[in-house]
Image 1 (cartoon, rainbow, N blue to C red):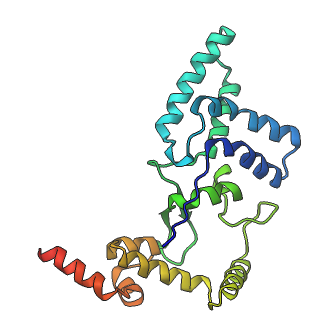
Image 2 (cartoon, rainbow, N blue to C red):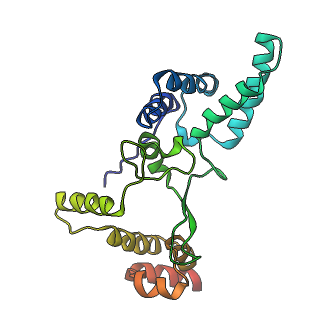
Image 3 (cartoon, one colour):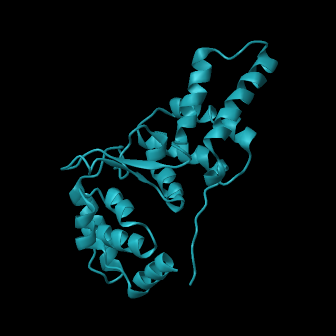
Length: 223
């Protein structure tokens, strides 16, 4: 089985960052200024895979940046200068070393939740823009507005048609739940990720566990 893993390098950040700002309608001079504020960090961190950079790296860089600025200019950076660099670093949206999607609209309180993003998706999010904005929608139009749900439905349906599968978002959701359970995630975890009000709903609708999964789980528990 061939596994494809996509990795974005740190050096890819500036063109991705500039492209996103341009799509959001920023003037060319503004795009250049914001991108330039990332350059000291790019030089400091080197050409590393994006997923290897941690929040501690950002803190260490800011300490280095202030020391280097004082050495070159004989004074600390002005508050505006420091703030601009920190704003540029918001292209890295980590919490506890992870990226998260915030689900704010739901019929229930349990449905309003935070979902961790697998590292394989980070490069796609950076290229499409959400990581370069605060509280940006995951799926955006060329003008930076959120897709309407019908637009998402049509895109998923067309992708399914291209591979000969009847596909729609709800089916992908069910596949996610069943796959996570069969890969060893607990029922409680899957229930929280899916935003169900209780685990009974998850078990009834999504727990299509494979026989070998059930056997392995049982033997691990009693062995």
